[in-house]
Image 1 (cartoon, rainbow, N blue to C red):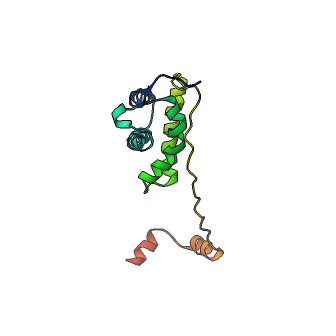
Image 2 (cartoon, rainbow, N blue to C red):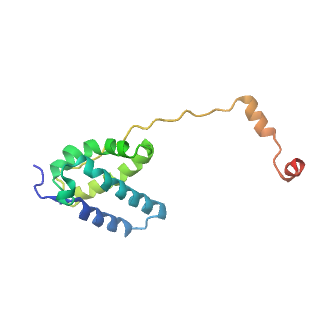
Image 3 (tube, rainbow, N blue to C red):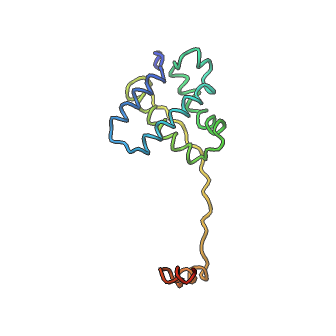
Length: 148
C-alpha cells in the first residue's frame, strides 16, 4: 500500500544534498549534484501535472507511476545537447535521492529511474604501419630544434 502522505520534493532534496555535502565529496561531485538539482527541478514540471501550484508536493503514486517512468526521456527531450552518458550521471544522483526517500520511509517501495541506453563509439585501431611509424619517430629536444 503506497504511503498516503504528500512528499515535498524540494524540502527532501535540500535535506538530501545537505546530508551528502556533509560527507567528504570532491568539488566535481558537488558540481554534479548542483547540476542534477537544476535539471531535476526544471524537468519535474514537464512530467508532474500541476507542479507549480502544488509547490513541489507529490504523492508516492506519482513518483512510481510518472516520475521514474518518464524522467530520463523528458530530460533527454528538454536537454537535447546532453549525451545519454551525461544524463545517466545525473540519473545516478536522482536514484540516490529516491533511495534516500525510501530509507526515510517516505516511499513504501524503492523507486528507480531507468538509465538511457548509451551508444558505444567505435574504437580506432592503428594499423601495423602506423604503430611502426609511431614507435620509430624520434621525440625530444633535438627533433624540436630541427624543425625551427
